[in-house]
Structures are given as C-alpha cells and as structure tokens.
Image (cartoon, rainbow, N blue to C red; front, side, top):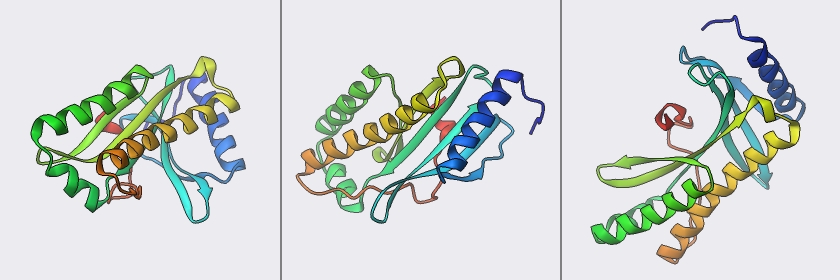
Length: 177
C-alpha cells in the first residue's frame, strides 16, 4: 500500500483516526491495494448491540471517504422472502432500493442465487465537508438506512427481524463501485 498520501487525504485520515480512537470505535486498519486507507469500526448501540462499519478511502476517490455498513437477513426472513412470487419480490426490493437511492445512499445486495441475503449501504463524505459532526451524522444515517430496510422486511414478513453482519464479519466495500 502506498504510504505517501496527498496532504488533504493525510489530514482527513488523521482526523478520522483520532475521532474513532478517542471514541473507542476504531478496531483495525484495512489493508488493501485499492485503498488510500481504511478502518474497521464499531459503534455501540446499547446493551450487547453494536454497529460494525467501515471507513474507506478508495484510490479512485481522492476527494472523499465512504462510510459503509451491512445487514444480513435472518434465515427465517430470507426463507419467507425467497418464497414470494418473483414479481412481488422484485417490487419489494425495488421499492427499498429506490427509497435509499433517493436519499443519496449507494446500495448493494448480496445474493444467494436470485434472492437477497444481505443489504449493504454506503454514503460518501467529502473531505471539504469533513467535521466531527458531519462524520457522525453520516455514520448514523447509514445505520438508519439499514434499519429502514429491516423495518420494511419486518412489515413484509410481519415478524421481528434480528440484524447481524454478514457471515464473514467483514463489510464488502468493493461491491459498491
């Protein structure tokens, strides 16, 4: 990985790392040749719950970072949605995707055959607007976007849906580009 970072990228990396470390959310660096830098992070959400998310600066986006998280469908909800008629399933996921896109989120679905197994949501944060508040607002909004999907799935299945990270525990940031 190239250690020579442009001044604006280095400044953003240092700010983000300081905020994440000060707030005890930084977990580890992500090493990837396609990134200028990357961090694995955790945001505590209450009793025994936490949001795993990543902050990555892809080399092809020299003016911003990407905040990304994901949510796996429970086996019960996956099974229920898998059994819906194809048109109904398509309409349901299209509505979710459209609502997220209208709000500026980039979204991707992890598929098993032709069915959605997990939902990944990301939002870009430009260095020019990078403040402590804007960073945490973006982390919160990405989390709320995944919760929107969880709510829609609960409505569709009329059941409680536990959320969990993908089976690997890693967020697939590459799939969003």
